[in-house]
Every structure is written in C-alpha cells, then in structure tokens.
Image (cartoon, rainbow, N blue to C red; front, side, top):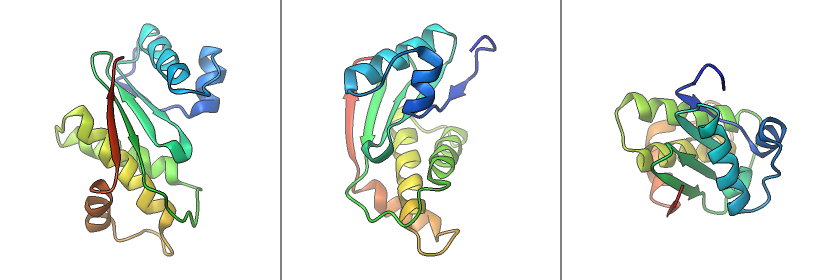
Length: 137
C-alpha cells in the first residue's frame, strides 16, 4: 500500500497473501484490517464471502452479513460488492451505509437469475435484511 490508496478490497485469501495473516475469525479479520491501515490504506473493505464484509476507515469498523441466500453465481459478486461500495462513497454516505450498499449489491447479484439484475429496488430491499454490527477497529 505504498501508494496510500483511498480504498482496498481484498478477500480473505488476498489478505493472507498481502499481510501474512490467515483470516479465519473476526479477530483475524480485525488484525488484517489494521495491517492494511498501517500500510497506508485509508479504507479497507475485507470481503468475507458468505460471512459478508468488514469495512473500516481506522476510526470505525462495520461487519455486515447478508441473510441466507440461494447463490446462483459467485462470479462477479465481489465486483458487484465493490461497485455498491464505490457508488455509496460517491453519494457521500456514512461508512455503515457504504458497507450495507456493498453487501446488498453483491448479494442481489449473486442471487440473480439474469444479469444484470434489476438493481436498486432489490438492493434497497436487501439492505433491510442485513445484519449490521459495529466493531472496535
């Protein structure tokens, strides 16, 4: 992270490869987030697969989990999650809402029979079904 990026979005495998830390528990995930911040990343969105996302800016950290869903395709779901995050950041949303838009967008994409899915109404409905927990960074 020598370039001090505004946002990085690793998954657990990428986090392990880049930080040397296995991410197998919430405590491991928090350690990985801290390592990315220490390396210069402003915001870190750690994708946890079916367990959702941890999003941190160093001052706040949110863990957002999707409900149980039927996954039709995982291909591109991480990209959809990142798209939701970037869109929410561009709207000036708070970090909690940014995390929710990311997880909801990725979840709607993963459930879709046809791509692209009818996004915004489905994403807004999915947001109401998320489990959101604030963590100490």
